[in-house]
Structures are given as C-alpha cells and as structure tokens.
Image (cartoon, rainbow, N blue to C red; front, side, top):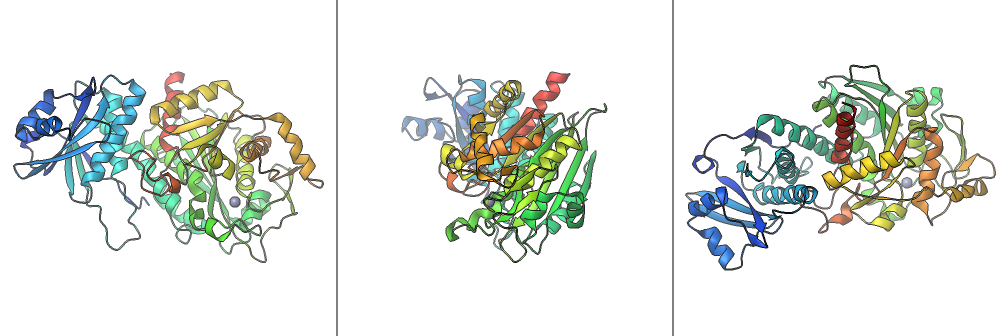
Length: 503
Ligand SMILES: [Zn+2]
C-alpha cells in the first residue's frame, strides 16, 4: 500500500500541439446548447483539419458532459471531451469537469502510458483546475493488483497547470486511491494483524503522524467489550489502530474520525444468506475512508489535530464467537444485550467512539460506517445517510457535499424510537439491534449513547461505501462495480473549510 499508484502528474509548459505526447485531451464547453469552438479548441480544430467542426455539423459531438470524440492528426490521438454548459453554477461545473476528465482518462488508460490533458486558463479558476486533475486521476484508477494481466498502461500525465494546484489535487486523489485499495482488498490480505503492518508501513514516512495499536490482549485488558466480542470468533483476532496527526502548532483538542472496519462480515452466528456474503469484504469501507482522509490531510499539511480510530475485526461464526443473547460490557461500562450478531459494526465503533470522546476528549467526532441495509434501501447506491443534532455541522457537511459531489441526505434522530432499546433488552441497558423498520435511525440512536454529548456526525455509507450496485449510475470517476472510496474528498473538503474558518 499504496497498492495502486496514481499516474504521476507533471506540469506542462509550452505549445501543447508541439509536444511529443501521443495523446492530447482538449475540453469543450457548451454555450447555449452548442459546442463552443474558440481559443485552444479552435486551434485544436485546425490541428485536426476541421474534424471537430465536421463532427459537430454531423451531430456527432455536442459538448455534453463526459462526451468523448476521438480524432487523429500527425500520428497523435486528439480526444475532445464535452464539459457541458459554460454558464452552469460553480458546484455543478466542478462535478461536470470531474466526470469529463475521468471519461477522457478512461478512454486513454488502456492504450497510452503518457497523456497531455489541457485546461482552458481563461475559463477555469484554480478550484476547477484542481477538480480537472482529480477527475483524471480518479478515472485512471484500475484495481489490478491481483491480476497477472494488467490492462492499465497510464503512468504519467501532464497538465498545463501550476505545480501547487497539481500537488493539492494529487494529495486528495492519493487518499481516494488508498481508500479504494483498502475497501476492496480481500480479507485474507488485510486480516486485522496484517492490516496493522500495512498501515504502519504505509504511514511510516508521513510527517506528524503517530500510530498506536492495541492488540487483542490490550483490548481484553482495557475492557473494549464491543471490539473483543465481535472479533473473537476469528483466528485473526481484532485490533484497534489509532493514528494521531498533529498539524496544529497549538495544543488544541483533536477532531476524531472513527471508521467501521469489519474486514469481513459473515453476520456471525446470525449468519447472512449465502448470496449476501460475497461483497462483505467492503464492510471495512468506513475505515478505509478514514485512513484515506488522514493520508490526504497529512499530505496537505492541514493545520489541525486529527485522530483516526480503526477498530478492525472479522465477524465469523465459530466455537468462540459471541452469541445472540450475550450481554457485553462495553469500554465505557454500558451493558449491551446482543439481539443480533450481524449488527456488529455498531458494537466495534461504539467502543471507538467512547474512547475518542473520553480518552481523547475530542472536540468533534465523525464516524463513517457501512452500517445498515436500511440506509441503503432508503437512499440507494449513490447517496449516504447522515445524522447529527448540530445544525452548524449539518450546514458544513452539506456544503462540502455540494462541492465534492458526494451525495448525502439527512435522516432524523427520532427520540421516541429510543424506547425500543429497553423494550428489546430485558437484561442489559440497551439491545444492539431493535427493529427492521427505521433501522438506520435506531442504529444512529444506539451510537449516540457512546459519543457522550460531543458534537457528532454519523455517516451511514452502506450504499455508496460498497458501490457494487452503482454500476451504470455512478459518475465516471467512480470505478466500475467496486467500492469507490466514498467520503474521502467530502471530509477533506469539510476539514479544509474548518481550517479556513478558524484563520
Ligand atoms: Zn453485519
């Protein structure tokens, strides 16, 4: 790890039509519904002997978002990509640009090892240029680590963009690559003890990052009843990985991110039906995203203090598995009565949330979890559910979402549903699972007990975290049919906004 390296991005200076690169990408906006042929587009049209204008006249190119037209001249491939409406608002334009540059990268990556992407200096500000690079890099991703025959050739790309914008885009794209690799990694590659080694190796060279690991004995001794119970059925025992990033000079309390990291979820003794088992390797997408965020934040040297908690466990049935009707004493002393061993994620992250709240005294906590089928059923594969009681945090996360195009919908914290927890748990303080109806809401209410009053956002990414059923619906910068690293860009943007508000 990084298993998959993004293509190296270089700053290109000079005449794009005179470079020796065999693939050249030229973006084309629309104005009043028609492709806008001016500036560099007009030059490119001359370079390809009017092929663009001919295609437009014949109705073969309209400049729509992610539309690709391939032409050839002087032994080079010239790819025109549509960027959609020039007068679209900035947030929409950012999304259009990400999608279009990703579509161009997809069209090239299996045939070319180097490519030159152009941006129109007059039409794109720095934010839009950055999103163009991010789009191209995310569209270049192929998960081929476990394939002998690798199709993706793209190793190096060039942009006529200044170096500092490239560095920012690369830092963010690398975080997403990391999250994708990890969310999709097979469980035999990243069982909790192996995951610890990989995370250590990965973050070793990164400035201001410190790693602490609780192994199984530590977890038992310190009373992490949730993590221990869920993970003890596997021979690969659970771990709690804690990464601290100190970016602020001041001694301020950290913001904490907790990511659900069930390396494989069989459901445990409440075993899932056979057809639901296959994709459960992606039940660690929350943890993968949390690590991706930390990576990008450290690479960007954001002046904040951040702590990331990764409770890694494998949930399988065996003679030592936890049982339905067990009563677990959690790290913070809460007694949880187990009504369903497949509601395991909330047990592992509850311990981590409480630890973040009490041990780190976090000033704010965010968790990401592929938590409930209910959230997925409610919102589908592209949209995450989120919960918070804090109106300011709600505004901030929604603003970040509009900028990065990672879609969210707020669901309510319905207090009257809390009654379900005691009704279902005659022995303990609460039950871990109470009802199918409103399952995303009751899961959020369960977790809320463990944040001990801290400002908190819970992101249930059961749909977009796994992403397998998003094929054909997702934007072009998502990989096909696998976990897309959902939430990395969202939280990096959220944190960037916090920093700029503070200064
Ligand atoms: Zn489960």
